[in-house]
Image (cartoon, rainbow, N blue to C red):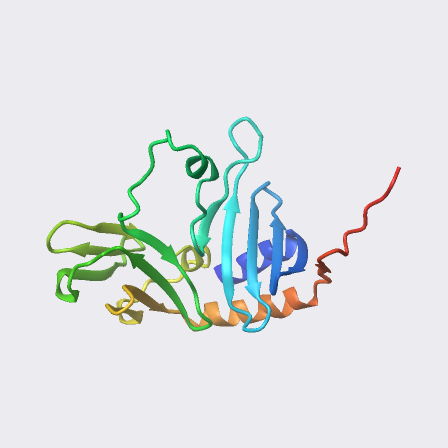
Length: 201
């Protein structure tokens, strides 16, 4: 089963843990050279950030790609006023998970609820958000479900307009997997701030 193969890939990866600023930070290095970094809240055990990095075509370290959490601001663009950058009123699409659901928030979309159409396209394994006024269209997949090859379910999808939040209820297989993974991560001995062992030469 695909769930077991993803668990095996996680177990084979080299993991480093760090406790810092109220967060448990885990860095995974996979056998194929990919890296994944996750941050969990120490009090609630909720996933705050998950990001991936691949090697570049020349073998160097590539840019981090955010899967869960707030997109990082480009430090070069914020320092240099001559750089062309996106308008701050453009829609911002981000994912924030809870223990029982995947959630996406879309900021800067001022249209009424009846303008939105949200549905799962099971043949393409993606979710589509579009507006009837043709001002917004977004097609995206759920990497967690793709990794363990579960089918998408339209009945697990809901949409609230108050916070422009799209919610997809997590399948029980993913909830079980995340609980098992969290138990394993808590067993890792994480270094705290200031605990770094520096050898002098």
